[in-house]
Length: 151
Image (cartoon, rainbow, N blue to C red; front, side, top):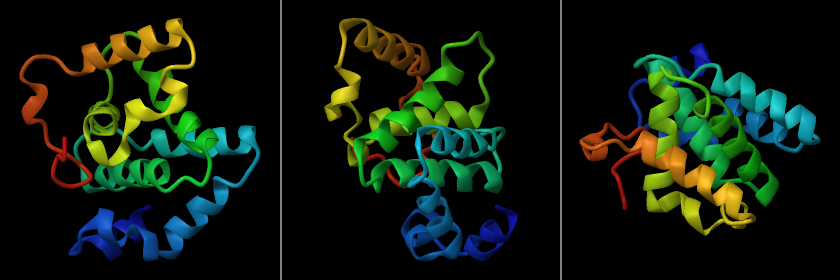
């Protein structure tokens, strides 16, 4: 993490992630079974803390893994890891909130078009409830982590 941040300091992280050995290793971890992938994603989510280059990097990594996933299971697990942390009582870490907001607002990720967001009425209500609580009035001008907001 720290080595990758130092290398990426002067370049746009979201554009250069795909060409780094660090992200290649993280993408290989997404080929693990469900349990191994869940552990790896939780380790990444543990880095989504206060505003810093470290948090920014791991937020971009999480969003990159979501967008570049080969199968829907990876996207579903990324969402699960973020959602599990957001359904507990506040306060939530800044990086976690920013990552989830970016995921649901930025059209690049097409979050709401994935089948797991609509698989059951109860699940759909949970997603909508968490989205409403994250998108409080005035949060429309939040800082994006993956580039300009394309919504």
